[in-house]
Length: 301
Ligand SMILES: Cc1cc2nc3c(=O)[nH]c(=O)nc-3n(C[C@H](O)[C@H](O)[C@H](O)COP(=O)(O)OP(=O)(O)OC[C@H]3O[C@@H](n4cnc5c(N)ncnc54)[C@H](O)[C@@H]3O)c2cc1C
Image 1 (cartoon, rainbow, N blue to C red):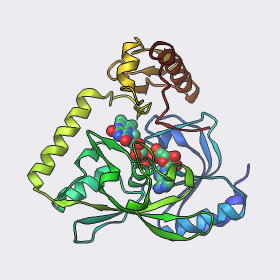
Image 2: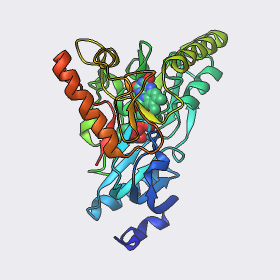
Image 3: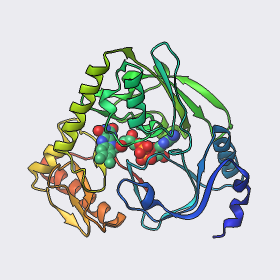
Image 4: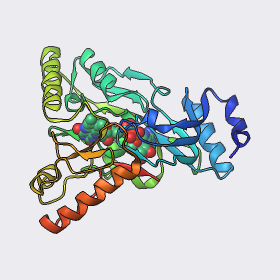
């Protein structure tokens, strides 16, 4: 494939590269090249890039921080637009609300809320995603979830090129489920409704939760966090552990010996290795626990 068909993107405000290795943009450190890879600096550039892809029939995918993604070893054809590092506006509206562009990291958002003396986002400190990615999948941890603090979502509709604000109350959001997983809208930003709090207490809560993460999660190996969603009848990690699958490996991919809910990359894992581990785990858990495990990690094949 040639770069010429993406020529028009060069004029947009952003960074355009070709055959960009996606392993450099995913927390799993896995993934082949993106045919074209664009990081827009502005919402307008994003809008134009998406319109360009639509007009020319080029498949277009949105990447946040790549922390919930498993990308094929062959990479992906078409255009990948990464919002992390580009769309990074962050501001308080003074009434307990914060507006964040989609490319802001959750860590930055949480620290900003702390600086403003606003409480409600402490649970998200330590989740290594972008605001867009977190809204997309209703990220959550330690009893909190994005849904509870979300006020509105700013979206770009690739079909019409229009940007609108959606009231969070009108959205059907539940555990690791949002309409964005199926409706094709691109999240360009979100507003969060928080409450006034004590900075020392907010900081202490953030530190405590980060400490719990470090103690329980295999953070020294690349991964995409919890591989599977929580099934209705229990916890995926506990079931995988009870099936004796800690340490189960294929190639460089392994069910973490520290936390059975994570598949980790021990150094040279391929996408195929990870998929084989996922497959093996799902089969054993189905046999022994009569439970179907659904992947939480998104797969780009
Ligand atoms: C060590 C570790 C710990 C983790 N802990 C947690 C945890 O406690 N709780 C939790 O919920 N998750 C956790 N995760 C998973 C991950 O961090 C979250 O799912 C996060 O919200 C993903 O955001 P992202 O920006 O990295 O999304 P990406 O991985 O880049 O993308 C994921 C999906 O979202 C879509 N997407 C991203 N941005 C947008 C956008 N702006 N508009 C439309 N679609 C978009 C992508 O197309 C893709 O389909 C963890 C991951 C790791 C590696």
